[in-house]
Image 1 (cartoon, rainbow, N blue to C red):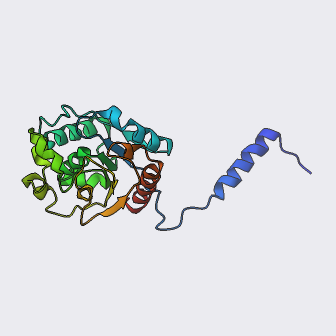
Image 2 (image 1 turned 180 degrees about the vertical axis):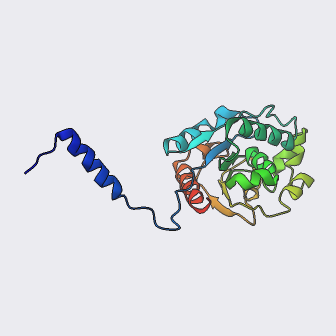
Image 3 (image 1 turned 90 degrees about the vertical axis):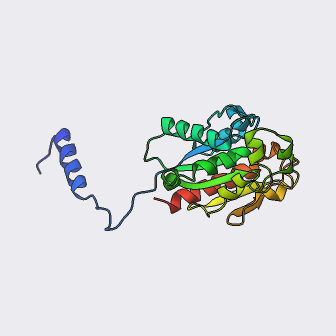
Length: 227
């Protein structure tokens, strides 16, 4: 029997195994690209305010970005903050990156305002809003700034914002103990998946494990649906 040197034998074996590679079946698709998750803070807040939520999602395997939109005291319009948000996303993501947005309180409105632009909407696989005054809050009547006026119940801004159903899925979360969004059912939308989280308040909802788990499931499922 003729014996091959070990190096030659290894080379022959690799060639044989390489020729046996099974090609992917016709029509097989590659796994969808994971979304970049944009976590957006609300009124009188900054990026640090939503850090517990960002850290919880990062720990569950998601790539999260958190803009710091300023001034966040309501002295500029929500549209102005949406332009800031768009600039932040442009500077921190590639043009082809799929996106999902998670907005707390006014941050949900800022996100939705940005997504009125079809260019951004095409990249969006989904939006989740948390304690967001989609139908306004009576407390906004106490705020004299542009953003405050836009968040009053029945404002022209809110009517225009929700005039057309979005082209991407929307899920809303609220707490029945929210004393900032009054009435707290104002956080719901007629064309959305509306959910309730057990939480003691408007800001405390961000720290709830149940919210983190549901958001993680949503983000993963939306990544599977969209290419």
